[in-house]
Length: 164
Image (cartoon, rainbow, N blue to C red; front, side, top):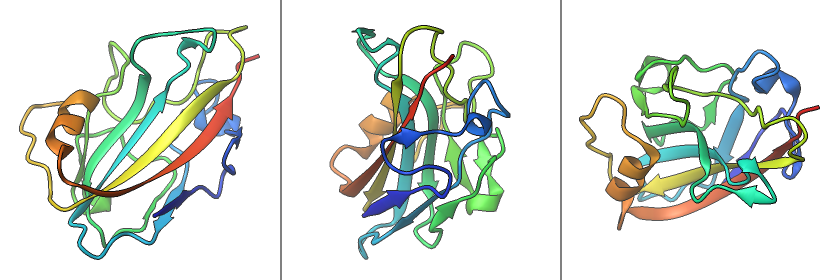
């Protein structure tokens, strides 16, 4: 599979618009070469360098979790809504990000000032099933657990952001 963005190239800077210092909107993404046997897609965005690249936490900071994206959809437009059910994306569902409040939907990069450049991993997974998660706001761990044994393929796009 391939995952890309019209807003930034792999290992390049994420534009301010898509960060906590800007409009805090999700960037546009598109994908191709999804396996024919796939039944749904999962997108996870995380920062493995939080709180700082020299002293990362045990677990990456989660910026976005979207699951049950229909395979007929080949792109995620910019500025997706911050709601559990994404009707515009064929009823895909969003899980919980790492923020203690406002924890549903995309929250953009906003690393601590002076911590250096952080990498942001946009990870797309093709699954051979749809996930049945009934909790109000599933975490990344809930989604990863439900995905076990169902991943057909995956793709990754890495963006970089450093707060001035």
